[in-house]
Image (tube, rainbow, N blue to C red):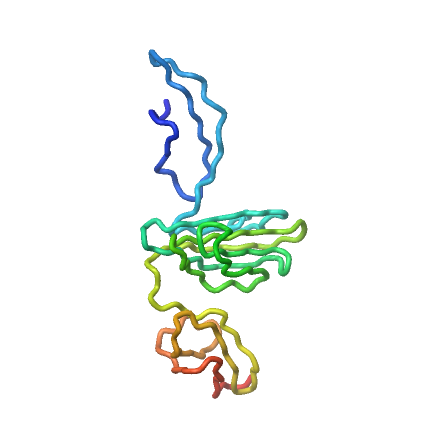
Length: 220
């Protein structure tokens, strides 16, 4: 027996996020007689806060050719916002793309279009809905390991991290750095450390200009 319904339309709840389902219905007639089950309708529920989104190849395979996939994630709690953190990222450079939109659909403001093997910085919604949307588009030849995106939801940050961080003019003892400020701020800090050390755990050196030249580096 199935789950009784007495309204049409009807909202089925209690489903798991990011899961494939097939749904059947049947009529219950007078006297308890029932019809045959309908043919199934297949659905895939949307990802939710706390989920990890993989491309069609999953955790270990490559995505396919000629894919066009749109994914939207809404926060579960009113006032929270969604953040996409790219754990891994490897697309055919210049031919396969992820485009992220700041909102619930592709008519929302475009955050950026990303390709190649450089993972984008974390992206946090500033839309009134708190939602983020991405579109993955692959061409007909050559694929790669794809993407792994951690979805988190939380109240909006009060101080947004800089974006578009770039370096230039690297010499034996200095490097120029520049970035986009997202809070109207005029003060920043930097940390220079050996590659692979991880996220800094101490305060950095103050900066009050953008761009800025970091000096005192070791050569080689």
